[in-house]
Length: 559
Image 1 (tube, rainbow, N blue to C red):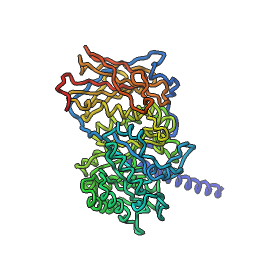
Image 2 (tube, one colour; image 1 turned 90 degrees about the vertical axis):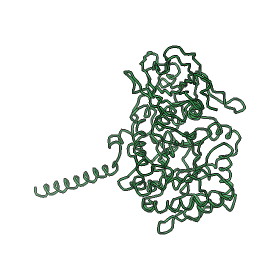
Image 3 (cartoon, helix red, strand yellow; image 1 turned 180 degrees about the vertical axis):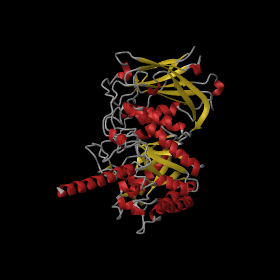
């Protein structure tokens, strides 16, 4: 009997210890997070709703359910954006042919991908045609491969990388990137290698290879608008291994040296610290141990010209771990959409306190981390998130939002193989055309307003011209919307819908947006309404529209 009691006592102690370790491991993992363990668990499963009627945005729900809403717009300035607010990236893996995500997405992949990307051809006239239409913009060359690349400015051929590096940036590839940016009216931002291969045995950063790139670029007269030091250094433990994590203290010392070095060759360029990775629910992963961005900002925020952070609202099936798996209905939940605001507010507070002269950038974002989710990130449905996040971040005076990526994988704006625009290319084109630099506050009145997302900005190039972006997230009900603040004003509607939520077909006022037989972009016009009374529009479920109000008098046109 005593033996049984002894066994029970020992078992109870062991179970208690395991529970104690487990509870504290969870507490550490969720330190400074926005949610708790239940949110992470829920993030592994399909939250619904089931979107069985794929043409609902085009034809409406058969039951004909409608809710009404009144939109209010306060045209006092809330924030001001640069013309480059909507920007995009080319992954370093694409530029140098490094490891990236498997385009077939057969399952989870470790590190930053398992398949070598074919080097991108930046000299295609059709690509120029599509990209120049999105200018002005920044093009950021970065990503995980940025911290694995060796710069060879002595040869047009890449060759084999030295020990400690995974890939090589050749002179020809760098020339091509700079030529591409210049031709298309883009401002180039480049992420310098802060990774393991560029470090000495004692862990300090070795500037030798980076300086060779700077020297060559300056001699060529290249106009590099910004230099970023490292990519997501806060999760080196995840990408490069636990023993490769760089401490905030070491990074701060390195960054001071980088700034001094870059300014020797590019005195007018922006110098940006690394963009910290923020994950859904968690924020900076394992920040109990790697409390990176706050520590950097407190100690050295005044030295960076840009406070950058990276955020994906969900994670694709390629990811070996996830706090919120991508599903079709995941980003129809306003709580999930609004999470970016929570972290944006935290970033803005750090910037205001420690780097008040710096810009705030969303340095990397896409519909789903790890290459995007096939059939979702590249489809119509993904565009609801993209436009919503652009609207939200504008309210927080984020100066630049960099979309990952211009081409490639499922989150690319353009299919790299065919150069066919995907829905978010068209959405980006519409944003550039209709959403200007001044950001205004909006409000929604009604009984079902949580499903209606509304953003208002100035109409580009026009004084007293305004555009309202309206997104109906309800999968069943149409929205009947009135806008009393613009009574008797003529307006134009750019209404977007699709015959299939999971397709890449995007209809503008019922007509498909597509290139002509020569690869030229179509003329994009809204549907005009003369005005008279209070403007009213109706949006089908999961449809969205830009409603523009041109200035009343011709003198309001900005020369």
